[in-house]
Length: 155
Image (cartoon, rainbow, N blue to C red; front, side, top):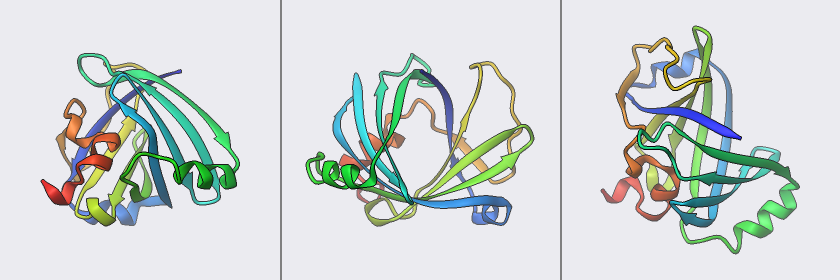
């Protein structure tokens, strides 16, 4: 139930040719409190309810609990979520021993491209592809819960 993740901005679309999977994700928050965010997500033909705890001081590690739910239930829950929906295409790219999830945001967050990598340990080393830019792991503006309230286009 612990997620160790680092986030980076992406410099170019060059990652797309390396992608082995691309899926549309629509998500919103039942609760976007930084202490415990509750998210509803539809990813193609599957849906999930996720609870994320507050991150540690580096923003890298936090508690995460997720369970699959019926898509019909997720669609109903989206109707009662807080204002602000995140819509993005997630591309998965294998780099070395890891998989990067690169999100190309649409709608109010169009223009933002962000990569995430999940690690087993905060000090784990990983290969950084040439298209990877500035790290934004501890910058709360790049959390999806924040982006749902203050979209990238409004910065």
